[in-house]
Image (tube, rainbow, N blue to C red; front, side, top):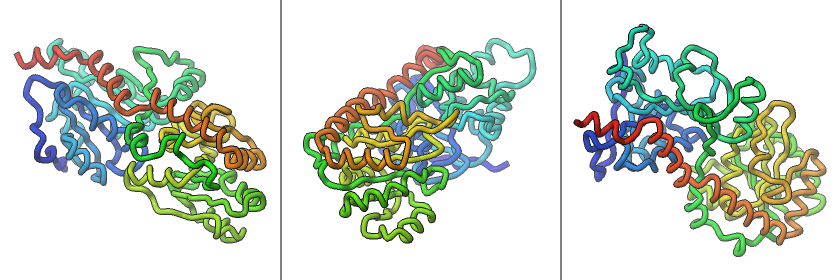
Amino acid sequence: MVTAAFHAPAPGHSGPQPGTQRRVLHVVSSLGLGGTEKVMHLLLARLDPARFHRAVWSPEDGPRAAPLREAGVTTFVGGDLGGVAARFSPHIVHVHRAGWPQPELLRPLRVAFRQAASGVDAALARRLPAIVETNVFGRHDPSHSGTLIDVTLFVSRFCAERFARVQGIPAVPPRWRVLYNPVDTELFARLTPTPAERDYTRPVLGRLSRPDPGKWSPLALHILPILQRELPRFRYDVIGAIPEAERYVREHGLGDNVRFLPPVRDDAELAAFFNELSLLAHANDTGESFGLAIAEAMAAGLPVITHPCPGLRDNAQLELVEHGVTGLVADTVEDYAGAVLHLLRHPETARRMGEAGRRKAAALFDAAAQTRALEALYDELCPPELAAGEAR
């Protein structure tokens, strides 16, 4: 058996006080820079260390490990999840996953805590942890391992409503709940200009995604010749380009208008990227189960243009972008290009939408508020007196 590498919090953190904290173990597939890992990081680093002994397990190391340890979070990398969980003995396990069956994340917990034997005594039952999942894509897990989940957190109301419609399962508390993904709205408020200060007359739009063809729509490219014809000096800043995009720009003579930029490493770099823009152009034919880039752009005071996705595809982008309020929704290439031109030619409209988006992000997605809501859920599942009772 491969033993997990244990990494204690960085020096300067006193560590847990025995008997005074509930042990919380977050489980994630990697410690990379993806959106799921970012959400885990924002929540776990903000949990009150006086109330919770915070830890994370991942099968792979990554760039989020060091800042988590600096925030006082214990990290376990690799090894057997069940063995780690048995040793750490968490009161709460919080799994971040797609939502469909992922036995590699749940089966080890079943082996460690939920033995199939029918006669589980009351003392052991009290020691079984509550298991929470953040269900990233709003999918259903009918497997035996899926029955371990005590509470499912959907990342948008869209995901919860689609789940209920497709599965015929009422997605209501206490079993099913919505907790929006967190955004560091305080950081974006500090590092980006207010909408009153931002210059929305600059003909600069931006796009942000992973360099994954599944995160692109032809809209993101086919609008460009129209913009070049109508606004020759416009600029399009792109993070997450795919080869097809680079080829399209080259073949259509758009090199003077489009800049392909490297990935950002943190929210400070993301804020600097947003500071160059007058709007965010979101176009993704897969759709969004939440839309973290959209929420972050809203927190920075940018109006967002997006489009609907057909059928049962993800459509939470329409939950974030309210047409005519926080941005514009367009169906066709012509409508999408027209929406971009309208905002660039009407800066006061863009400013009004930027202000509405910033207010919405602060009200619904603020990382500190989302963490307090998560702490309240943990209190409900494992009341503080439980740890105090163990100490006695």
